[in-house]
Length: 359
Ligand code: ADP
Ligand code: MG
Image (tube, rainbow, N blue to C red; front, top):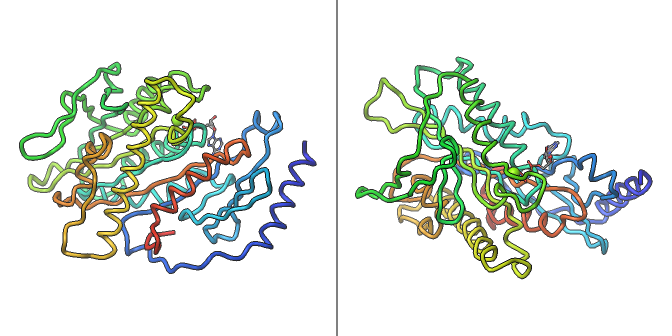
């Protein structure tokens, strides 16, 4: 087994030396409010001991390149944004892709973090670590001024929404007469300290993880949303800051349509659509951002429940200033190469053809 893994690594080195370097694109971090990154998690103990081998290799030279080798020794190369490998701790990802959202939301703006990827790729693991670091940052006293903090956790499955801090009570999502999306009756909780936030996180996660070891558990079929609202009591005019941490439904739902029952196929199609609409909406705001055109761009946020809930992130008629990060999570196993390719392509598409986004 060990020999096989070594062979695999040696083969990778050889393949790298034969690959043409990707074209360097000029990227400017400040130009865009969208950050795209990929995290390739380590192989887990049970995966290596059952004979699975690695197929996805982030290059260690900080070039933002990921190589993927599948069984027929066909190699492909991806540039999904900033790249984090199996040895990178959640702290590094947090520092470069999440921390900038915190002072931003504290000042009354909207910061959104999405974890994207197939089931088992490390979305919940990454969000869990990030929630702990966010809880520390909000309450370590380094941010200026006083704020009141409120948290809500909910889940979107198709057109239904469930309150994860209220025994999974279902609630309607409606648009009010000012065109704002309202989560009707959701319970928002006052957060006094770090421990409060972590306790809410834990409570919500327990309700999500119905059967975490199977690929068909509830949490992989729904989007889990943590909404932290940051209110400035000294200002009546400023809008509240909002920080969203979003654990997206498993992206493998975009495939395997034939093997499911009709209800499952409908669910799968809905997840497929919501992830694709999300991509179009993020591309839409990135393009609007980079061209700085005075014309309002068309952003299809009405086409899915997820983007309707995030209307103030995506509707060009709302004047909220937004920063958005997408972390594309990847299971490096050869068994998951189909899903990994899709995830890497999704991240590349978010970066856009000219890649005006940060790396
Ligand atoms: P997802 O939410 O995408 O379905 P999980 O976050 O549940 O995936 O991760 C699948 C498994 O991999 C879990 O057992 C998790 O603890 C483990 N895991 C994920 N990312 C890492 C990592 N960076 N380091 C160590 N273990 C990880
Ligand atoms: Mg999960």
